[in-house]
Length: 343
Image (cartoon, rainbow, N blue to C red; front, top):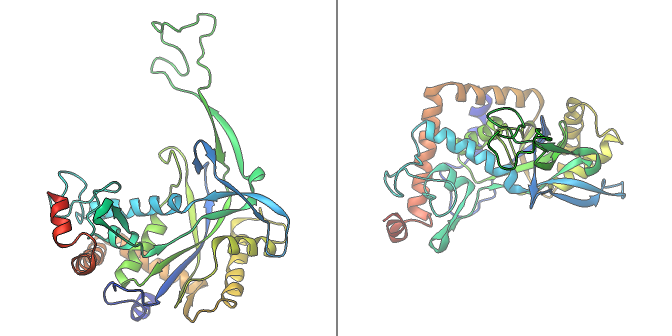
């Protein structure tokens, strides 16, 4: 029997209105593969924290805020839903029936993205997210994790050259100067992270896990940089929330004993041991923990679903129907509110 089949009894037959204590935690290590930019008001986000749980030295860490994590993942999911014609972002709001656009007041309130990741539509209502996440903190100090780069504007008539008819053209200085400077996160910087899915159906689990595995770019300027890898080290099924990202990061910092720039494989191995130690301290009932070979087999089964157009279409169509049923029964945009909003 496949691992996915054995997991199905862990999930809800439909999305419940009230929390019922069914949590799935995706424990992972996010690892930069290029030069991501996580910034607010032009500077990288940082926080000063204790280095470890036992190491009480204070260090500055890079911060990857919640929205920097979840937004790219839900956009990857929405792209997939559009490719399967389950939602559309074109046309007038409310026409066709599966219209949904990310942001503003154009959420439909009934698609998998709206129901699972949540939304807010002005005074008309909102849906609380079933995906919980929090700010992630870099394992290494800020000073070792970033670098400032200048960049230039390209000119169609020649790289970094001023046009001949440009009134600001200086014959003695033909090369265009650098126009800006930005702090970038360096490659191979680690962000230990826990992302949580609450009270989900089996199909919702496949969708959220797929979004984690398929999302490749995070942060600003994602079309040019920002590649990151999500190394999933464990999936935990239990009846409550578990340790925070910062607690996980600090415990891992202690366990690495100063070797915080170790190869990612070694970091993931240590992170797996740390995860199990921390779980033993949590006041939750754990029903199942998927690790090692079992996790690899699970990820292969999920990949097979995404590689099969027939299986993927069937899975996400069922998920869309579940989300629609939830929205029609409990959703914030049901009835008169939705009708008036879509006029």
